[in-house]
Length: 400
Image (cartoon, rainbow, N blue to C red):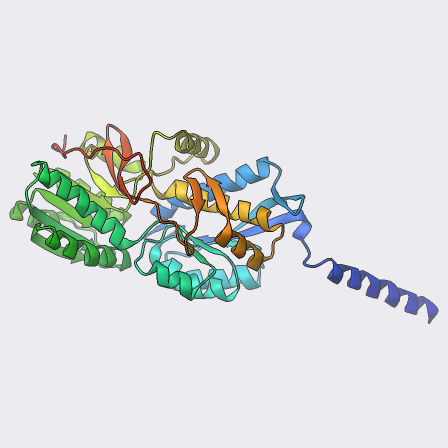
């Protein structure tokens, strides 16, 4: 009896010591969950913008010996799932990461719709939600509804109206006329941008001579380009998803669409875009951009290529990496893996990132790139909400 009592006493002492020490730090490792498309319509975009930036960050952190958490260096372990470009699958993955894998933090998903679909669940489990590949109006309301959420890439209205501002300058310079063909994918991204862009074009005095939308799985873009060509615009604008961006551009080249300004996006900023279109890419505009000449971007691009074998894009890839730099520095500032403390650190901190110094204003980054353009093999930012370093736009001149 005395021996059994001794064992009970030892066990109780160990349990009390463990509880007094707080949450167990999983063998000195911080577990990071990530759920995004590896299959489905958005898999190609995630393969460029999302996964390589995350893997580079994990590599960089671990090569430095880990993240400083209250004086202890903790390495990072990635737990990743394919959401199959499905809101339902993404929700299952987030649930599993939170309740089965019990990861310390979650990298929010890829894509506007999936970010919004999973936001309530990420908030329910108290994780910081630093959204990157999500462009949407209403982010001010989202930040209030989910105080754990942070928004980095901008709004649909800013992207669309900034493009209109560029077109106004080109028209005022006598480079283009007032005729515009306007096209959009009938999904959340395309609908939001056309709802903002169309009234902005009309208010600026442009004449929308051709307008259409198409479903997410559209494969044949010949009728769209043919319809636009028949309307004889100087400007073609398509708020499109990655596959559509490539398809519309390829068809425009085949049809020799005679426009002076050609805009498609997202995915115009992908490195595969000039690879697919050759010299015809020159002068094509798209959503986003970056200061491609900055040393920080160039260092990031070369290291990602070296470490992951994948070149980054010229827009959201560096922002994805910057969002993880924010998470890392917030963990260190908080000195703990406590999610609420890290959220508080993000709200109130200032962070050194490859996109420059970041401070969230009511959970939102307010300076970001809005329009870019391929110029001599580089996708340069030509408009932003105050980032600085914008290049001058050029005319689209032929498809050869």
